[in-house]
Length: 287
Image 1 (cartoon, rainbow, N blue to C red):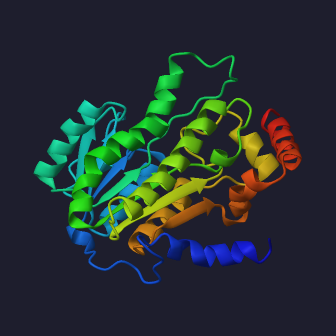
Image 2: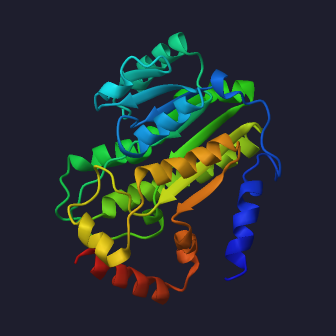
């Protein structure tokens, strides 16, 4: 294991170069000519992504249900569209405005997410379509809308914000963990289809899987979590690492912080060992 993880850190970005392993970054990117779509771009990680993109002169379309912050209003590189990303019709309407204003997007960052703490039995029936709609189904709808033009030009980036909880279900977060597991499967399947079905060797895919992040979605016991597990990631840290990947024009998997990269191996552990870890983390998460 001590040798496998460092080797994986080197080989993973190369393996993500469709249709075969690629060492060099993809050519043909001029940031002041690129158009990015960022979901959930009005706050948290999404806001920091938008700030970083416009700093590089990338035109950014924000799809969100939260109002645009005052300090972003009127910015020439920002287009805001209040959009329910669980609705294909709403996405299509926003996409038409984006194309008319900026042109076809070359970067899609599926960042929006929702979460709320409750056990399986406490989960409101009406909340399930919302959390799976935003955290999972929207990935399909947004990609169906914006990927075809990327395939046509053989150029694009699709970034999926997931979570380390894709590898482990925690008490009072089972719906969230399941939706993030779906986002991981989506990312892996998209990357494979781009390679094998569409031969789109110019489209880059990245998945970002952070641990706890201090955002408006942070649980009420965030301070207790930090005392127990250490300092949470900041939105700036997650966005910074994500944008570093985007601007490097390299696909891959980012598990944050780096010392949690072993989470991706959990499903390969013996079941008894997985149960021990789930029990320990489950008890800890209920404190």
